[in-house]
Amino acid sequence: MSKPLTTQELHNLAMNIVGKDLEAKGYEFIAINSQLKRNPQFVCIDKNNQRYFVIVKATTISEIAITYDVIWMETFKTHARNNNAKVLFAGVGLGHPDDGKKPPILNSAYLLQYEGLQLLDIDLN
Image (tube, rainbow, N blue to C red):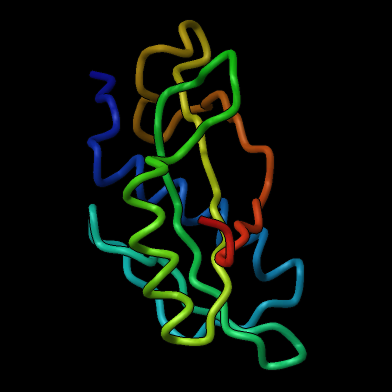
């Protein structure tokens, strides 16, 4: 029987996708947090030792770009400024191959919507 991925499994899959992207771009991981609603998911540094807080949002496939809660993000940007870190946002849409609005099935193919890492300006607002 096919079983849809749970919310935690979707989040973990999104984190794996983003983690591989970060690794490919040369970031070094300092900390990883895979708990739901705990941010950031990744703390990493680049080759210049600049610290980055990475927020991963897993959601269903969308016809538009995946966004974040702007008001909440302002609070998080303050946290990043206080820690001399920059903020990267990664929206990951995951869906069933037959219907992108349904969650993927465990151990099966899936649809992916990922536009990459988005650097957020922590000095705005």
